Image (cartoon, rainbow, N blue to C red):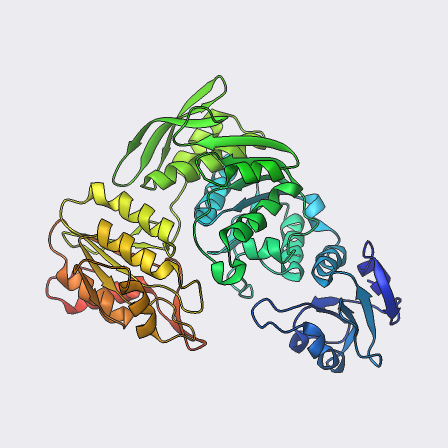
Length: 488
């Protein structure tokens, strides 16, 4: 495709290159530039360095042009635009043939519940014969195929990868593309220009403040999604629901676990050890729903999925069948079979709200003690650490405070921050996460519940910039195999 076609729809402030040049690739990483590449120089949110610094390297590697919003070295081929992030999103869509226009795009945003809700939507639609693509934290799925060899990306991919995935899904005959939409992606314009047929807001609790700095900025970033959505499905129980509704440019459908004043409400809720049941009320319609994932938060995730699938045309009875058949999600309230007389669960809870939710879920279904293993990530919001310590000590009988992904921080210092919020003495500190899991399993007695929180589906532990293999399921099995009577 010619460069001028890739740049179609982008206001060019100045041009210092050949617009007839052929472009086959688009990247924001100068190291990945090759012949026929358009290198987009954007500001690095984490590195705090503008990509224009690497423009010469990209051209040396074969880039035909640099797309930038900062004036470039005049000796290099470049085009100057007002906003490089926006231009990147438009260029990525153009280069891939604007594939989002061939799909019905569904998004889910919020601090907690994005992954589970997107999986539920996919399962409900697939059960009703709809071919879907799924983009999220856990996996990438196109139709019935889980893509194993895709490059690693964050929750919401950068525009070049995102639109390439849309193209693959459209070419494979998918009708829907269902995706998690992170606050970072919205703040950085990764989904700029993508029209969402439906998008849901689950909740907002303290997280990512190392990036957004304030809850107000965090909420504002989340709310941007609904300015580009036809139907916004909003959790009325959340404190920021009104802000999301105010931003919505299209129709709004509210849902609630607590109030019947919402457009979609849950009544007669029954919480079981391995499932939830409730009646979904939508206008004059009522339908009994069952989902095989425990916890009150599962009701909220189910309501969000019901609202989305209603908005794209399914009936309540069709949704109920799909929801009942839905599978659990790796690392989300995942009970690990251990063959012991106590229960072990892995969950991704890594924020104060999500930790409180999962502990509140397991407390009433536990005959013995609740033992919580958790930590906090390094290079992230430090203010949530003592909060999580306080929540854990109040809702668990014993806490094993340990490492999560310390990244470039000292694990011991992170643990100190957590313990600073703990006033009781019902905790032990074991810095090594493998040893911490072992310690929790060793202290478990019949009827106890061991919750291992924070990493969920992650199969690694990041220490000083290096990701080491770390599958908690394997750690559990290996430890129990060494114990007399371990049946794993």
